[in-house]
Length: 318
Ligand SMILES: Cc1cc2nc3c(=O)[nH]c(=O)nc-3n(C[C@H](O)[C@H](O)[C@H](O)COP(=O)(O)O)c2cc1C
Image (cartoon, rainbow, N blue to C red; front, side):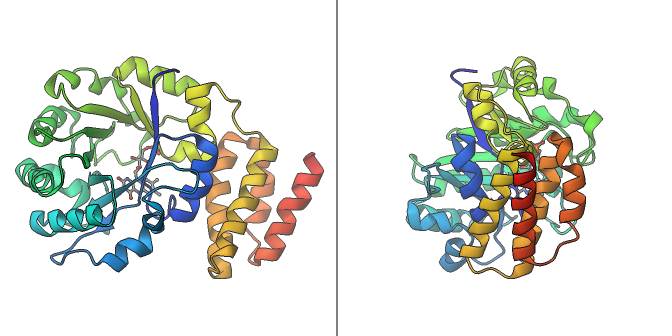
């Protein structure tokens, strides 16, 4: 698909800085996002931003040059605006406001605020007022709190002048991740409500076929991929450039790259294996030949042993 943009979605606990580095180097994404960063009634400390978005040391770009947008989550318009300003001061080129997270650990924030469109409006307005006009501002929502019919009202609340993009995960909060609840077609009529804002389609875009269907259903020119990017690490290139999706061997090579990256950061043994297992847990969904290997890999605790198992499997299938 030409003239399309593909984003790597924000994914807390999954697409953190080491994984963004690995996936962006393979995925040809136009942009990626930090996991959500909570802003409380206190302004976000600079050191928290630097710790989570390590790409801040590199002009808010991954090593391969993919821009990283900072995502904030919270309910306090004033501290969110001041925190966004701090990110901008440190070099962030874009801020994304999270109104989509359905986690039960997130109380008065994320998708819980979908029930309060006027507060969403005030937060978005405060962010836009605080930021330089050249700093991109985007908002990420779900299609509603409990009904998709809420979407138009939500768009009207946040589509203020100066908002650049709105990403919609085409399920409501109540629908969580239920496969049958996804409905891309709800976005088709949204463009006219926000003619100057790029509407970004999100939800279950996992290969070229689903990307084409999503594009037709939504008439969006920017797509955001989350879990699909873990199933197929070169997904952006598959969608935009017709690249061949990674095969089993390339998936295993990616596991090694993930492990090496986390080892180089001197993270605990458990983290190394956990991240490799998380990745393979998604990748095996589109690589059924790796299912049995994945089951065995999940029982391994030691990173050296884990790496050896991946190497042996690579030799076996080479
Ligand atoms: C483990 C996990 C963590 C996520 N973390 C975030 C997050 O930090 N911020 C956010 O806006 N969305 C988050 N999401 C939602 C994704 O960005 C995306 O909207 C959702 O997974 C649907 O897209 P997909 O079908 O392409 O995965 C998360 C999803 C998952 C599965």
